[in-house]
Every structure is written in C-alpha cells, then in structure tokens.
Length: 231
Image 1 (cartoon, one colour):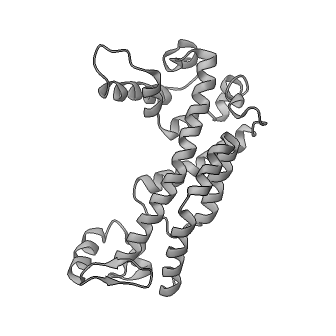
Image 2 (spheres, rainbow, N blue to C red):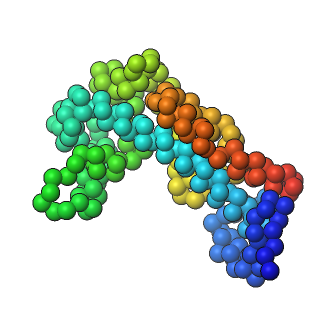
C-alpha cells in the first residue's frame, strides 16, 4: 500500500522511516530539531529534490565560468596555460596543487601515450580554483590584463564584487555537494543570484538556465510542507 502526503510525495512504511531516521539522526540534526523524529523523512526528500534543482542551475554557471576564463587564459598564456611558467609564477602553491591534481585525474581517464586534450584538464578544475583567480592578489596580475575580457562585449563587473558573488555561490555549491540541509535558506534569492552571475558571463546561458530551472517549483513544495508543519 502506497501512502502519499499532501505534497504528493510517496511515504515509505513506518518501519522503513524508522530505519532511515536512525541512520540520518546525527547527520541531519538540524532537520530533527525542527520537524521531529519521523517527519524528517519527508523533509529529507524535499531537501534532496530542491538541492538537485539548485545544483543543475549552478552547473550552468560553473561551465560558463570555466569556459570564459579558459578562453582568456589560453589567449594570453597558450592552450596549456596551466603548464605555462609565466602563469604558474602568478598563482600560489594551493593553485599549483589543484592544477597538478587536475592533470593527474584527467590522465587517469585518457589512453596512455595519447596526447591529453587541455579541455580534459579544464573540466577537472574545481569551482574554488576559478574563484581564486578573482582574488585581490591577482587583480593587476590576471584580472586587469586578462580575465576582465571574459565578459566582452559587455562591461566587466568590478573584480571585488564578482569575487563576492562567486564566493556565495561556492558556499551554496559546497552545501549541496556535501548533502547538507539547505531548506532553511532563502533559495529563491539564491536562484536570483545564480541568474545574475550567469547574466554577467553569458546572457544566453543564463536565459536557458532560468527557463528550464525547477528551483521555484521545488521551493513551492518545500514551503508548503514547512507551512503545514509550522516551521
């Protein structure tokens, strides 16, 4: 027998809910505090659904960001800019480590003896790496001579403001990637911030993201449940 709640989410049998909540008890303490032990199952499902929707939106921004920055770095330092001595002299040891790891990870999935395309390495670089390139220490080394061109033909944002925008998205991305609760955040505002950054990087990509996003729908279901529970 399948049992559905008012949000049209199929609920598992009581004993299965108990098993799941036992496993998730320590992991999702914040949810337990606001819902009670057995209501956590549904909130967990709703949180997972909205997290997936947010991650889909974020992926558009991450791909646009790395493609635009890669293009400008390649124009200045060559297609394998991540190996270029001039570029490596500008960034810190942490960035060096990320670049080396990206090259090793990319090589694992590529035939030995065959030249590794630079795009494979670019795809392995973390969101945090691209964020680091907008740091104040690199304003006159990378942003002014190179990275601000990524926004052409539109005017580039101020580096400090763009850095702050990316940092907020990085924090949100990390919460979602590590399966942390986000139901208590202002997710409609987060969706708007993602769209704003997308508009700066590539208006076409931002429009596709906005038109296909399911964040607002998932947030409506989440808010309906929280209202029912008095959360």
